[in-house]
Image (cartoon, rainbow, N blue to C red):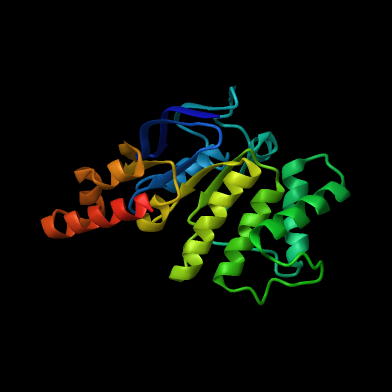
Length: 255
């Protein structure tokens, strides 16, 4: 579904992403991990049209989209969430999601946007009451609303940006299960950027790891969790700590 080749993004003399290539198959959940500043958000911004690549190719469903405007990309079937939810507080939950439906689905009617909003809210477990406001939502509710907005655009590919941030352990597990259900029930392919490695590892099909803008590892979750380069990036070079972390990641990946 997605083929990225030789992707580069420079900001002046700083290279944020350096010659990154990867593919995503239809129906797959790919985990994208790495420490702060590794280039994860920059890649998402290039995939969604917020940033124009300095070099490289992004092919989605066989069409080149590198450098296309965000509205063209979202209308073509790529939706995304954002790490920090920013709903319109003067609109209801339903109106927030329906607005995303209008934007993503372009020329579709008000009725279709409303139908998309109702289905998306139900999918993430939020009320479909058209008068419910957003101000009472906690961190988990705001993350769900962000996900519902992305789903209302009708994506074939969902870019999920740190869906676990600010959640407690139970809420993290629920959010991770929700992403898996979206793939299983709606057939939406997902790339999931996340810092919380243990939860991600038990949900994704493959993992790609970035460090300082370069891809340092890619493969099945258990193999990536045991990669010494990945352990060093996350935890440093302490042998006992790295071995314990690898064992825990493999255990979570096997569950």
